[in-house]
Length: 173
Length: 408
Image 1 (tube, helix red, strand yellow):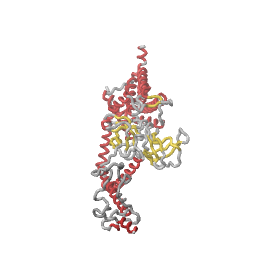
Image 2 (spheres, rainbow over the protein chains, first blue to last red; image 1 turned 135 degrees about the vertical axis):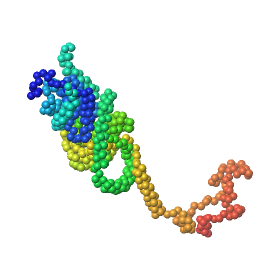
Image 3 (cartoon, one colour; image 1 turned 120 degrees about the vertical axis):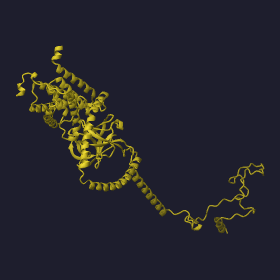
Image 4 (spheres, rainbow over the protein chains, first blue to last red; image 1 turned 180 degrees about the vertical axis):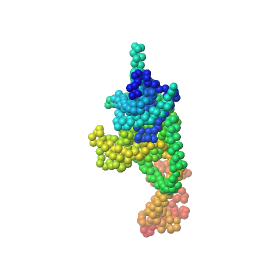
């Protein structure tokens, strides 16, 4: 198996993208996240910024970059809502850090790995959101784990479709 | 130290960013008396600035996406999908004609109701000035039921203005940016509106639940509450005017937190998930369209003319005329000779003294000045009674004649 074959983190390729991709892809994901729920409601079980954060963190394999991108995406999402700014920021920067840390150790071009990673990281993001809002800040948050499960499944499916498309943006030597 | 930082650089950066965000959250959230955290409804300047930046970045492409979608949908529905439109148009024209007649009658009733309530001292809001806006975006999170509209502070919008559609209430303006505004939908868990059940007149507070449904919370259990009953705004929250449709009762469930109380699940009248055009209530002064004004004027004139005719006919039936010009004096409706002692003018004294009515007192021994009439009122020649035989005798009145006949 490819993920077991690599003996060193150096064996994995670090994906590079044009600068415009680093700006436009997150921007498009934020716009879609803000706009699509109006079209797809009530079946809006997706989180485009999370999927894009995971993709770049896995591809770049740099925890700091993953953390920064996750924080930026989460803060943008918080700013568009009417909730406190920082809850999604914390959740997604942890997700970016974890994704990049996993990317260092695991070959992530495999579709199954991508699917499982997105599913797991979506649930982790939801759990962190719940922890921060309910236990850290003491806010009253209504919660449905079934919705979070659907969202994790939706994110995994989107990742399966979106990752190959984004792979085409890579700079290849 | 340097080796520690370089070795755990990733973790240090992660922790630094986490701590920074936690500090930021601590600034935004404050503790209530019950020990729970709550968000300040009014954003601080820094937080508001971040929201403004995010809105400025996301809104333009989002509006382009929305306009593109509208263009495609409009092209389809306006130029391609036009089956049966002519028949629908004819039916609608007929409906409009009928509704205009009904509207004129209803407006007259409404005006009468307003006058009566003004007499009772109520300060209610009836007719609204609205601004149409296009809903184009959302928060992107099902935990935050807010959406964005394409009108902002430059269009005169302010926080806490009510947002409605023709079907019912939608939410209230929460945050206003120069060209856009954020609207908090009524089905958000942090929203609230005073509502009343139309038939049973039971009041309650409308909120959103975790599933995005509307519910009236904390209502005392009542058997009369049945599914299908209309829910209206109560008008006591200073945001939504009274009487706007909210939805219909879908079902009644027991309040999970408090015994004896129920929660009423409400099916919203407005399609909260599929909002395109919304109306923002910007003022509550009366404002009628020219057609409505014309209808009202016509209705008012007709009503006034009817009232006047009705009043004059009643007067003519119940009250006689005071003077009939073509009838002799003794046959006039008000002619009355039934009194045997009619009031007569008192006779003038032959030698007026100080006790005579209207005479001034003259002390004894003082000769009155013959040239002056001081002290004695001398009647004018025309009014002087003919007692001394000088001058023409006064014509006796009818009553005097009768008196003389009785004396003889």
